[in-house]
Image (cartoon, rainbow, N blue to C red; front, side, top):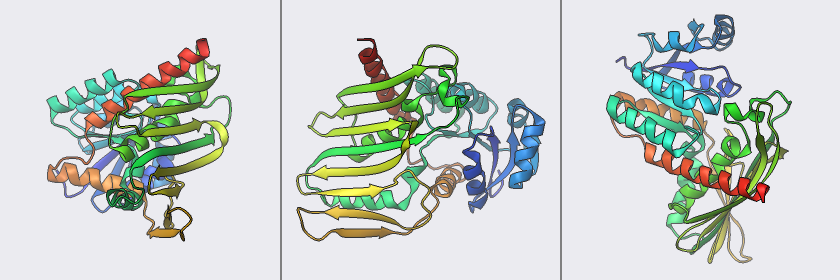
Length: 330
């Protein structure tokens, strides 16, 4: 393998406008190819981003000997198929969240990764920003005392009726598209898996079949009494925040999932005392995630987050989805 990880990109979703430049910016990686369903579309994106090779099919990209790893930016419901095909082709995989549509699918990916000895990472980029290193430091120092509540919100307006989020067959809906961040954040902050979940959703007719969630409010209850609350939607005004409350204080972070190359500010509150502002230097978390992944591949070291985490996150999402749909049918 070369000194830099050679990336191929599967898909031309909007997110690649952020991730391709980020992967190109990494010090240990280079984007050498992009694949789409047509060569015309692939060439358009390749020319726009200065990528040398364009592939008119995903299979053609996976067959290239010039590529060591793929970044998958396809609709959620296609992740399982193309992760498995990438692993069969000998490529390491960084895949957009959610890794797959169920815990069983994630477990299948984990088994294939073990069989092939290849790396697979679920692309929750926010976890690699230094503001979360600072957050973990504050929680470790009991900045909030005994942690009691976590509140996370992540919503935005997905736009037109032809958006892929309105298709059940593509894995759309608010919970799996945006709520997966809230669930992952809640599990990361508490360091636990929930013992109980509850959820309520709002639904519309999907563009293909059945009903699809436009917004979800959920609760995760942990065995030691901690509770995480979240709300998420893909037809709402943009909201994006994290609040952590305990017996000794409160931490607040605005825009935890945003790119925020400008400095972040973590607010620390203690019962009317003067607020403490922790300033964290801005960095592109997509770049940091790409560098971590490439380091792991090039040096044969473990990834910071293994596939057990992806399996557990999917299991919680499934439980929340079922709870919300049961309420709609009641």
